[in-house]
Length: 109
Image (cartoon, rainbow, N blue to C red; front, side, top):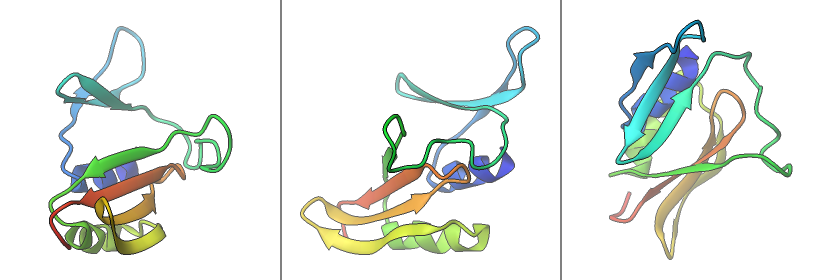
């Protein structure tokens, strides 16, 4: 959970620690009504990113290259290296569970 929190915090998300009743301690981020929660589990718990039922996330960031530099010390695998596209600069990384996470910047590198 700590590795996932570090990755998503690097993308600019802010989390609050929560626990509901006797449930597990987890972390929650409310992004204008869209909620992302991280619960404890073993690493690699997500379905293979290419399999049916897999979840992929995407985030717009000020600078793809700056985020990739900040993720490097965390050992975050890069699935698709940064490249300029019609949507802006784009890269895809894997979170600690193997989930694909797209990062996109519309204003350059």
